[in-house]
Image (cartoon, rainbow, N blue to C red; front, side, top):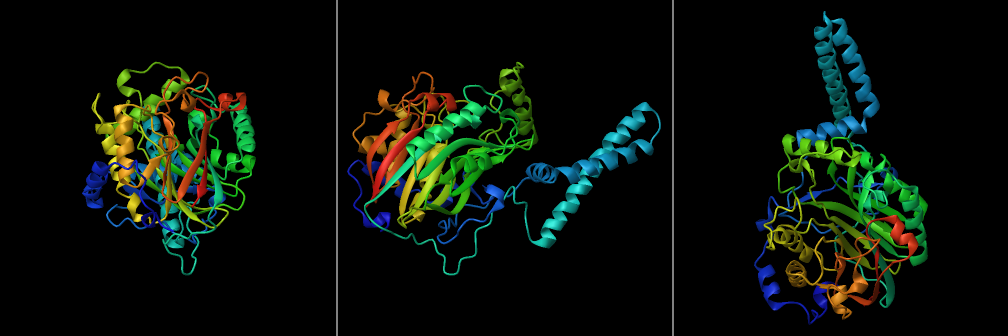
Length: 447
């Protein structure tokens, strides 16, 4: 039963419905891009029995030369380093004098790395494959469509949402085994069917260079797991949103919906990130270098529940109205830039939808009101509002974990066909030590 077959709930704002009806996908060109370079454990293909809906007016993201070069270097590190070594030796041997050899060595190393990456790129094209560490393909299932399936009604579904702060605990740098232990204990106790995470890293320097998708999937005993990265950093690390399923639930398809960084994506903007990483080492940097390159990329994932119902799960980590949001202080312009293009894609799916994550906007504020009206217009309701919980209520405060003072910046929205029955924030010692955020858990029934 698709969303369109259900009566729209009473808290949908008529003005928002009318406004969104006037918004077509053509109007979001340049504000949202589709990125299929997602990460699975071991590069395993996704199930692909139900596909994500096509978004004909949302362009496919094309890698810049900077991104492609960085990816090729880090995905083929041994070959790249080997090319650098050979090139450096040749450059040193071909020149004279200290400065000449220094310059020759640097030039040779650069050319050697470029040659190695070029050979790798050609080999990938010839073989018809891409690096499994950056892209997971979908299985070729005969007859697969983007028509959602409805399984058993009355099925109970538990969804947990959590910004895990790259498993660095309450610090900004360094993988913390205690954070992993606390997270695992919390998940085991809460037993979600679907786990929606933000700030999951793969190879990021500040998080110890760990492959957190693989670590978490193994530790938690997940059935399926997918990471949708925000793009590759100069250090080769990625950070993004991840979805895990448990038991008989499964992930069918996934992509990113990339929102470009409002300050651009050129080399100077990327270098700001490289300098900004010094913050994690405790080194003071000028204010203009704080908050480096960070394009937001909601994860767009199709999950099939244990009862056989296809649900579109949109995993968001938005910048709110803070630094790097591209907004005007005191206005909703940043939220408009991030939410309106995303909301315009939601009607492409005719089934049930969950949109969940870290919005970085306090509940009960003007920005939250705009957020709720926009998503109401797309057919989604704030779970807290549906359950009669006051926006900004203390019971939903989730940040910072060691003394929540901010009003519910982690939230969840659902479409018709999903009926919330209970929502709570986990506040025990395990959850508190795991991240600077607390997890939000929602129980719902598939109608």
